[in-house]
Length: 246
Ligand code: BTN
Image (cartoon, rainbow, N blue to C red; front, side, top):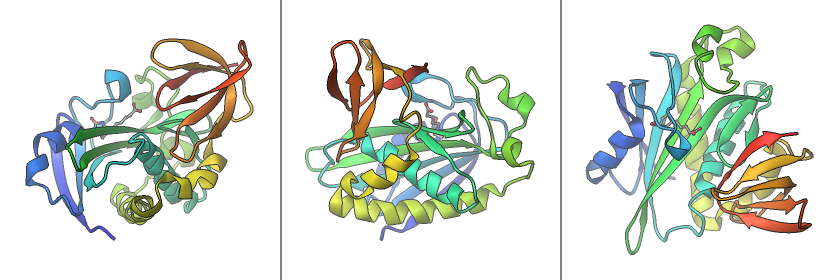
């Protein structure tokens, strides 16, 4: 199993950006985990802002190298989501994943994953950013532009970020070992149980078009098979997002 090397920062623009800028100084055989107390320019998918309050969230980036490169890099987001969910389940919570990268509790966003990659001929460097709202208050969450929640709001308890981080590191490193041997296929059935909106009519945006329909299943490489109501066909998507639920 890969070892974890921790880097803790008080304040940084973005842990993903820091990881990309410092890639060459990290050990590619292990996992470097960069965690910050606060980000001034946290980044979400599609260049959205990731807003967080000082010292109250899990803001972390896992850097590691994969060789050869997996077929679908996006499945690493799913692997991170699955690892987070498993840690929360141990705490008696029942999170769901809004494919491909949102962690939800009570249908509100608790966290998200941003997977970036730097490709070389024989390997790929993965920069896997994870943000989870931990001790954020209702007032602090209200400035987020979508329904969001935190572990504190849900449970009325203050959570230990460092313990959650240590649990997540262990869980993720174990899962990554399986992933490197067998790919995402080993996780499909487990992931399927965590999928949000499985029997709902949805609108899915693939970056070009919006499709109305419902989730059919997850493929062996973590892609989404989506039934399109108008054409009655199933299309496979490697990326995109669920934009609304009927
Ligand atoms: C999303 O839901 O769009 C993904 C959010 C990912 C946020 C995390 S916080 C730590 C890491 N650093 C960043 O700038 N972004 C990710």
